[in-house]
Length: 235
Image 1 (spheres, rainbow, N blue to C red):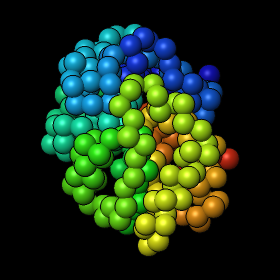
Image 2 (spheres, rainbow, N blue to C red):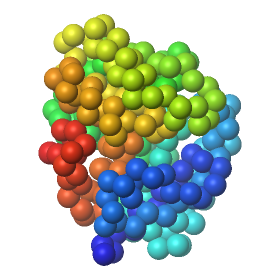
Image 3 (cartoon, rainbow, N blue to C red):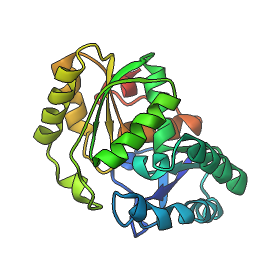
């Protein structure tokens, strides 16, 4: 058993560990602390934002050796500068290596060496606009961006693989020059859909959830390799 313990600051209102991390990396221990996102809107994120650093500190006290702040939109919605400050605050408060789902998406795209991307999301136009600005600040050229217009927290998990593949088809058609497709929202179930999109469109896919756990375990000294889940996790 690995000595790696990833503390997950979760958007949920309870302290349950999202299933994907242990599923992808069964040798790593995951513990979670929920911050209670109310909705996929700025107002729904605001109270949860204030809970992130205290939750990370609690996880450090419980034995976490690294911190992952789960929730893509939760961590990018206030803009690039606020995201960078949040990450610095979590690291300073815990004394641990830390990353966010937003930082992990960026790390995954950079690892693949891509700049021109098409983006699929769960979000409304307001949140999509903030994601576009965040990605532009990180140096990416967003050629197309489409979302499911979901505002209700938890509703993204109801989208099927077919729904996600269909949205990716739309984005791919709008952005034929995209070097990669990004699927943003930790609530979307992308383990199977991401592989299908890669096979169908011939470009690597970076998904919020897979990239987050990949980046977290790498940060903690593991390899991050997990064959069978797309090009990023196989690299």
